[in-house]
Length: 195
Ligand code: GDP
Image (cartoon, rainbow, N blue to C red; front, side, top):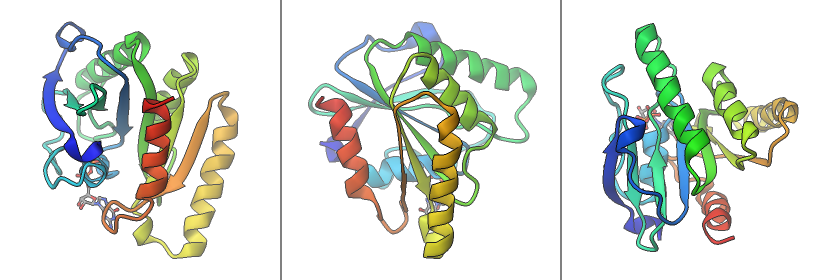
């Protein structure tokens, strides 16, 4: 089903969001964590979500429709160092209103670089998810960059940090480059889309 994902529409304000239809799973992550690569890997498409975008340009939420009427939702990446404060605040308001108000949102995937998990805005996303008890799945991407021992260490440390949250949350190592962890990932998504 993920292979058939097709771009549906973009929104840049709460007023331009498409009508709620089926279930949605949103994808969040710091810029450069590999959010686009992970979406492309999941959907087996080279350019579904554009890899390497211009930091600081208009922040869009992109909707991708699946054939079954559900959607994957690509939230704007966060953590660009050079983005002006005003744009960061705008980003925050827009994402927060989407996160709080979207009735058909079934789960949130947060992509993190396995070498630098749980940074600033990752915590903001987790807090928003916690406030509405939205289930979260954390992808520790770029696992190909670490040897097994360090990979396990990052997994454990991330799980430990998550104990501070009162939230249904799962974590896995992943590599969108080497396509490692795809089965675990799709099983989690399936459980949200087909409860
Ligand atoms: P985004 O800004 O979060 O959408 O990140 P991108 O998907 O554009 O990826 C950022 C950079 O990380 C690009 O140079 C990718 O080629 C690289 N990258 C993404 N996923 C992986 C991965 O699993 N392993 C490695 N080694 N590099 C990756």
